Length: 312
Image (cartoon, rainbow, N blue to C red; front, side, top):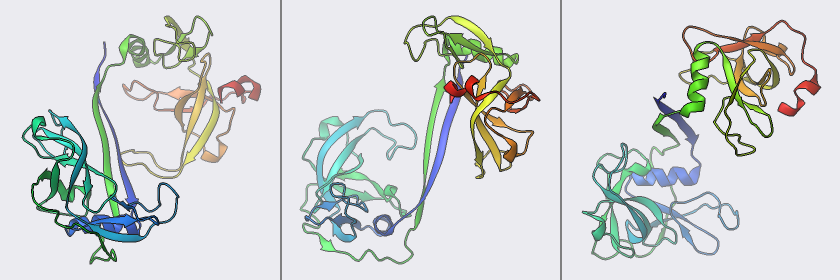
């Protein structure tokens, strides 16, 4: 049985409008801003548009750094990159002056010390950069509200934060199971295999051990391809990080001969403008890779549309 560590990572970069820019810059300056709707509600964290009416929102107000826990969940074994390294509670906190709750961490000695309705306050990070992590966490608080009433705020700060990069990353160990393990073993020998459903007779590549349409087990192994037909494609003009492929290049759906659905593959060995639906292609293997590096023209006449129209 095969298994391997797998990382799915996508650092998402976005620019900030005036509302989000003011909110994150405010956190850097130990100021919590919300936005007021036309009916007087104060939303924290603020949004650019009213979720109920879709009206554009720009009326910024400052709320308190103390608040009330509305609900919570205990995290007994924090994973890496959590707000706290020791066990803590995830809490929704309605800050004083706000009508909605903010999600963050609460530093508490144990779940018995956390309850809905408890009073908390912000513990600010020692170093702040203009991010939600400028709030290090919340902590229990027994004193009065530090700002019982909201006050208008112009949202103006020196050196405002105008963009953020959010690292989205998932680390896990992938175990493909019997069907995909056999498929990967065949790929290592430059063979492409699928499994045929005993009911609908479609051949699924890669196999999953069960037909996704009929929901019944599949066991009959079928070798497909290696040649196939381009069904649809796109031209990629933006270079991806950590991918050593020059742009532009073509990424296509390829229906391998004998397969019941199309799979993804890169097309090379031909100018982008010559790639077309119906183009017959074949895989190119490099080194000891378990998958074809790319597909190239097979030198055959284009396939008739009727032969692949059901695989679009």
